[in-house]
Each structure stands twice: as structure tokens, then as C-alpha cells.
Image (tube, rainbow, N blue to C red; front, side, top):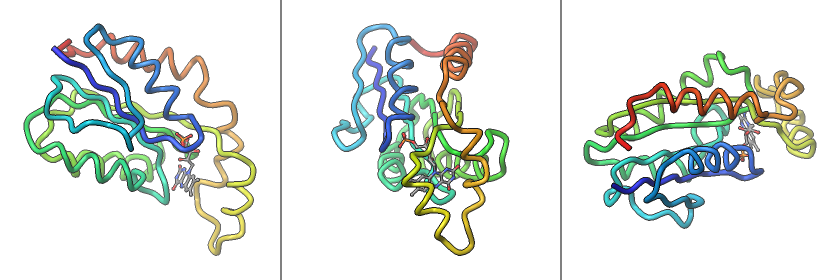
Length: 162
Ligand SMILES: Cc1cc2nc3c(=O)[nH]c(=O)nc-3n(C[C@H](O)[C@H](O)[C@H](O)COP(=O)(O)O)c2cc1C
């Protein structure tokens, strides 16, 4: 039984969730940033985390998710600036699910993630200003302890093959 956690994270928000999942999992377990991650095939359970960029899972995550070509147990998690219930988050999650076509999705989690001020400044210069920018104030400080608690509660409630 081998568990794998893979995360794509530029500013550390998604990495926080990844580390919490890693802590939660029983041995044997491994955790990698996405650019160092092994292919998923040798693992029983895999959790893949990404940030939402321009309305989609970030590009490195999209590439990795395409490697799920057999029926593996997959847990997806993500961070984003937008409100959790927004259509954009749903669409990005659906895209991630589509990419990992044959995987069995055992659970999905997302929460807001703070956006650094310099990133926001760049985004505000775009025309039109991206939708998610208006939610960035609310994203400040996330992921918070409440987000991590909610994640662990979800993992506990799932019938994971651990
Ligand atoms: C270039 C760029 C594009 C982004 N696009 C979106 C977006 O379309 N929707 C959204 O909700 N958040 C967007 N964000 C915010 C990030 O998804 C959010 O801050 C996330 O928590 C970053 O995760 P990380 O710290 O793991 O890299 C964007 C951030 C950057 C830098």
C-alpha cells in the first residue's frame, strides 16, 4: 500500500493543504512538488493538488493529471482566490476530473488561497480585470486553520483505500 501526495504550488497555499494530507495519511507515503513527482502508476492512492490559474488547473497540474490512465484512486484538491462556490472553481475542478479520465475520484476539496500583492497589481492592469480579483480581499490569510480542519474532516468521512 503506497500513498502519494503531489502538489503544484507557486506561493505555498496549495503546499499547505498537501502537507496536511501527507500528515494525515498512514505510511507508506511520499510527497513531492509536481516537477519532481514520480508517475502515479506505482501508488495505490494519489492526492493531486493545484492552484487555479486563469480559470483552469495550472498547466503543470494539467500535464500530470493526464498521466492517470488506469483506474486509480485519486483525491483532488485546489486553492484559488475566488469564493469557493463560484462557477469558475466548479469548472476548473471539472476540467481536472476530465483530464484524469480513468481515475476513480474518491474526493474533492478546495479553499481560497491568499494572492500576493504584486500578483494582484499585475492582474488589476489586465483588461478586463479578471473576475477573481474582486474576491482576493476575502482570500487573505487562507488557507486558514479552519480550511485545514475542514479538509481533515472530509478525509475522515471518505472511505479511503488506505
Ligand atoms: C497568474 C495567476 C492567475 C490566477 N488566476 C486565478 C483564477 O483564474 N481564479 C482564481 O480563483 N484564482 C486565481 N489566481 C489565484 C491563485 O489561484 C491563488 O492565490 C492560489 O491559492 C495560489 O496557490 P499557490 O500558493 O499554491 O501557488 C491566480 C494567481 C495567479 C498568480
